[in-house]
Amino acid sequence: MAVGVARALDRKGLKVGILDLDYRSPCVPLVMGDQTGQLRHGPNDSIQPCVINGIAVMSMAYIWPPDKCVMVEDKDAVDDVKQLLKPDTIEWPRLDFLVVDSPPTSSGIVVATLAHPGISGALAISHPSSVSRAALLRTLDLFAEHTVPVYGVVSNQGMAEGKPRFDLSDDHIRAVAQEFELPLCFVVPHTSELAPYFDELVDKLLLVSPVILPRKVPSDRVWKEFVKLAKTL
Amino acid sequence: MELDDCLNALNVLQEAFLAFINNSELQVAEGRRCVLGLADLKYHQRHYYFEVTGSRITLVDRYEHYNTLILAPLRSVLRVLQGTLEGDEEAFGKEWARGKAKVVGEKNFHDAIMFADVFKRLARLVRRYRELLAAKAS
Image (cartoon, each protein chain N blue to C red):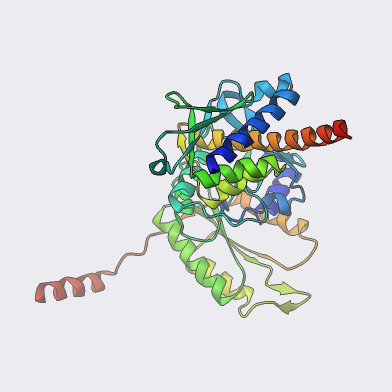
């Protein structure tokens, strides 16, 4: 998804970079079809990202051996990601957009990413399945907790040749978008010709303003009942 | 014995490095001092630090001034050196991914990446060195 969005922005003539923050299972260079890149020493002890078809890419895939599991402790991984997010660590070329590909969890890595003040907006991706929808709800809650502006949700690859691939439909993801009053809900089908869909998605992304989701707080009634119970105890 | 293996590996790496490194390679890591130290020091009476830069790889007694210190267990260091000697470009990356190496320093992430790059280039040099030696012997 991140690669599709980045390529669509690139097709519009915008300068784009991708930061692959899937620390333990990075795959952006693989998806982009070029894993031969090598990180280079940049000025002032920075790291120069690789460039694939005009898009600057920084990924842990350039560091980890492709066939080894990554057992770096969480604390050390978070420290690495924090360094990656510092403005002077990566010598990015002049960019209009930096697309950050983040794993779908509430791990320390994701939390460190969401704490970055430079985020203009987030896009939540979900298959139309019960499992993925549950992760989507948690992700939106995480965005609310960290007051991250949200563009919307994408229902990803739910239909292939007119047939559903998962146990839910795109309408279930639309319902989530409506429930959270998100400005954008987009559907990407399962097809080999994805470019037109990403072009349309990016057109819409550039038009909408992301919203900060309200944090869920207990209603007055629940709160009063709780206080009453506490006093009784 | 393991330390002897380390020292032997270092000697071969050093020889390969000095024989084939060129000026542009020398300049890559110039100004940065990365030190690979042994983390399991309680098993050893002395501190052993291997200094690896773009220009050399040596064993030093103790390092007071470094930009980045990578602390790893002796077995881990040995695996890196042996792997590099066998021409494995991922020898350092594998140990880093294992989570055994702790990297300390202001720009530790940058330096660890450069450190990994030095070992990749060393592995390539060793492969080249081995091929040339074999050709000379025949």
